[in-house]
Image (cartoon, rainbow, N blue to C red; front, side, top):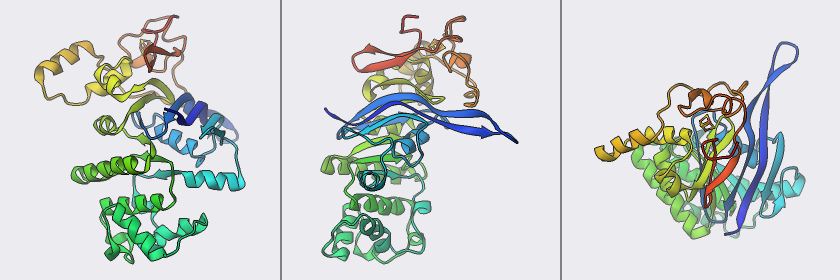
Length: 325
Ligand code: SF4
């Protein structure tokens, strides 16, 4: 498969200001590289504050990167401006966790959907029919056309937000925790709808979530982030079956396993790590994970950063247990 998106050594540092000067940087995204193939879903997971949301927003240039490259459909979009940027904004969209804050409460559903269509100059013969078609494709209908966002449930608001995205015929969508504010039953409907739309329109998704069960259900490949870095990248099935990085093992050990024998077996094999991630302002030297890692080697893990290496086909890990020092 050909990649639609390539991210090369992407960094986003936020300055921390003291009274008179910058006293440090939050390294929210710290030199990550990955690709997303056309029509696939790439899941991005990690604890809150690991940099996954900043990654999604930086790729879309909603936040300007500090350095690195974003290649979209073979073109470097890291510094594009004007009309090129406008076209990139149409082709690459984002769906937020809380649709209510992204829907103008004073606009009807019709206006919410038509506003970006007009902004991008997309020709539409019959706007009402166009919007009704979009609403039907997300499980709503013409009864909803002139109602306001506050009249809808959270799940319905996500459907409206999705209809607005579809109106622009995007190719790439960042799904930033799109269902974490919804009830479990509604979550499943939205996730299934996202999958159906992907099949129908060939969308490419970056699926950001802290919920591993949801990432497993949605993703073809995935990346695990820890303190601004990618520590494991590979096919989702492989990572869930055989997580290699101690941090990924920790994340997975938190998912309940229904079979008690398997749960005992996994408990023996996988790392159990306690504690909170350190501050991203002054992350630990070497492997950022070493203060929490039961396998840390003194003099190596606390001194030298491990490279991301291919351990088995398409499965990459940044850990000295798998790389030559
Ligand atoms: Fe643990 Fe060392 Fe691997 Fe980091 S590099 S995850 S500290 S074993």
